[in-house]
Each structure stands twice: as structure tokens, then as C-alpha cells.
Length: 77
Image (cartoon, rainbow, N blue to C red):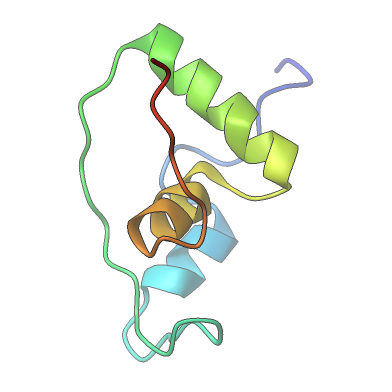
């Protein structure tokens, strides 16, 4: 297994399962997260994960913050 890979199979990391379990509640948002599906190219996904890493958060949390306007997106002219 390479250094960049986790020892957990996709979708089976304990933290992810804890966040999605019944009764789990984000202390930051006071509501439970749900699993969603997004279609994106590998190139864009890797770039997105790098953006999340610069904030010190997960890709999922970056999506959450963008959706809540905690982190803004600006378009280049």
C-alpha cells in the first residue's frame, strides 16, 4: 500500500461511518450529514482534494462550507 493510501477500504473509514450513523450529529452544523454522489473527472477530484487540504479539511467538509457560503467561490473574468 502506498503512503498516500489509507488502510481502510473506500467508504469504511471509522470517522466517515461515525458521521453517517443514525443519531450522529455534526457539532458544527447541528444536523446529520448524508452520503451523496457526485460525478467528476479524476483530474478535477484530485485538484479539489488539494484545495481542501490547503484549508486543512476533507473534500466533504469543503463541499459543506461552499454550500453554506462559509467559503466563497469567485469566478475569474
